[in-house]
Length: 187
Image (cartoon, rainbow, N blue to C red; front, top):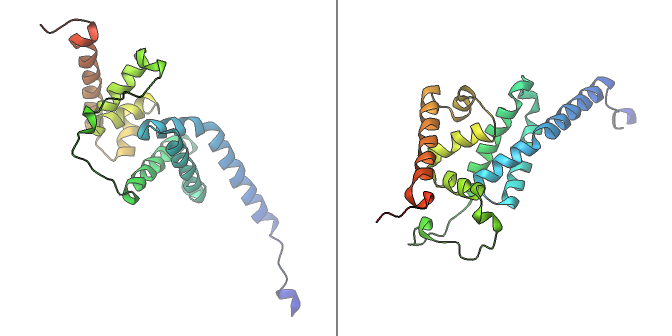
């Protein structure tokens, strides 16, 4: 009678399966954590929020690891989880809105030396793109995904993705060729 109340030791097959899952997960984190964090940072622009989203992404990945059938698709799978996690952040948050257009506010407190670099300028220009152009561009630039992979992740037609990538690059090119960037005046 008391034998049935004692804790049973896990079967060797169960232990082996758990160990296999843990190893698989650890290798996934080691291989892709940096890329996932980098993309999270691009999405939110805040290191601490990016760390939280990345952690939540890998937590959800652990829970659903059995659904990942193709290891080659792991990066796209994690990016999809990350995008959904980022969207959940906005579902939970209540924003205080003001009448001031956020794009018109100038950052006068920043003392970063990065302001003078091309990288900073490029980040700002990418940040100004509409989300429909920015997101596929970042998936391609940071994630290294193909148009087909981006289409799958964003649940769009491949041609739509390619058009958005083309328009995003053209908008960046136009910004680069703008007279104020080249040092010319309009008058």
